[in-house]
Length: 255
Ligand SMILES: NC(=O)c1ccc[n+]([C@@H]2O[C@H](COP(=O)([O-])OP(=O)(O)OC[C@H]3O[C@@H](n4cnc5c(N)ncnc54)[C@H](O)[C@@H]3O)[C@@H](O)[C@H]2O)c1
Image 1: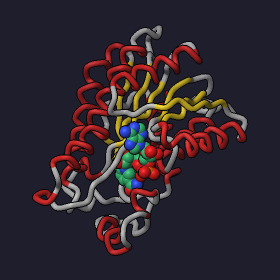
Image 2: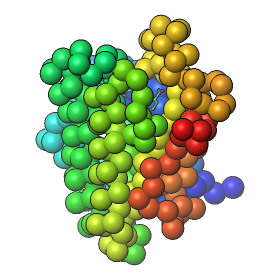
Image 3: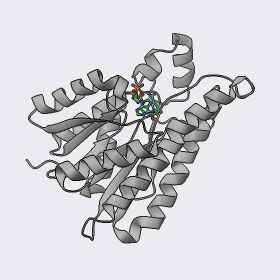
Image 4: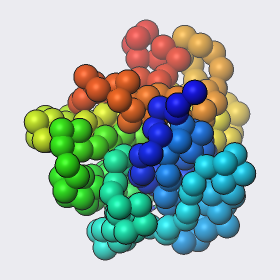
């Protein structure tokens, strides 16, 4: 059976672990050529993602990128185009969190979260869109950003993170309306609690607090996010753009 992403080439940031790793693997399973990207310091884990894709018969390679640095993002996109001739999809997924009430959040933590989550998404899209506009039309490319259900509502103790993810949803909608007519679709996924290091590193009572608004009372599996990300990047979602899509066990529905 043909894969949803057969012959397409693209990148996933923050793909050494968690949701990004799951998405990179799923892109590979669906026939895509995947550039697995993460911090240089995460190279070893990122190479495990590459190996998982190759072991399943897919095509993948690692390229380091700190998403908060414009030069890194430009080099990452250039690498995809150099290696595969074009860039068809991009998943801006790298992200970090800080847990503290607003008045106790340090200026440095606020700036760090905004630099990675929001500025990182802006820089990624900027360089990805420039390259996609060079693809022949009508369908030039698809971008998915990893936001959060904290991009759709407030969540106690993560004000800086919520601000960054509301910003990601804003950028997603703007990029979608600005580039729709040029054949680029842009969407976001807004997961609730997914069992990755971001969750498992937290104390159990904090995990329970984060999961409390969910209608499905369990943490999600990263592959449950990957299914939505890959679908949004595929032609199956050809009429979908500008959507911050909850993948959130009903947490926003019950809000
Ligand atoms: N796990 C959840 O419950 C959850 C819920 C909603 C949204 N998210 C979002 O999902 C995304 C992935 O998170 P995860 O849960 O898989 O966490 P994770 O910590 O397992 O993975 C995050 C990855 O991002 C990488 N990274 C961090 N800073 C980076 C930078 N400056 N440049 C490049 N890579 C960088 C890390 O090395 C890591 O591999 C994040 O954007 C996060 O905000 C997670």
